[in-house]
Image 1: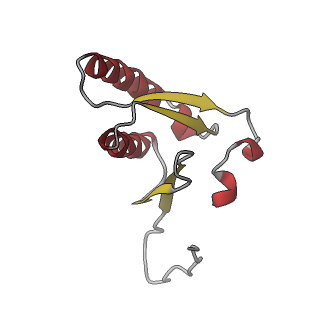
Image 2: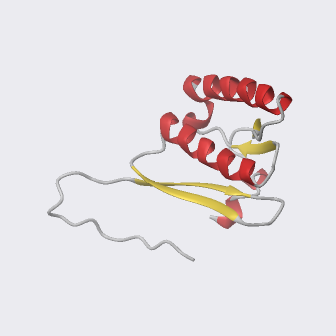
Image 3: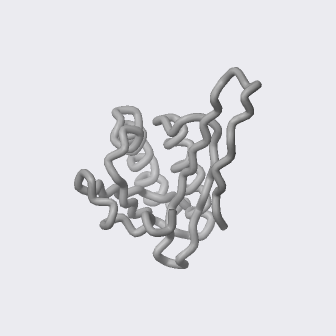
Length: 122
């Protein structure tokens, strides 16, 4: 599957952005992709992670090890605060025997895309 660059219709007043969130799974070598209109901002990042955690919880996974680059929407205060809150809630849910996925983010050094296993997939 490939994305093709298309010319924007000159009659459109607003430029439309499209962002793609993706996760390469080490357990089955598949990608979990989600396309969103607009720019990749913190709120959209949180929505994607919530969706991914829901999918993984249904499969019985307990922990998501996430390798992230240093994009501003990955390191934002909003995302870090959400991660803390989510992990606390997931830990409590797991103690009560409920399905929940904790997240362990690993941030890559700046300008090191070769360390991120998803980069060759893009």
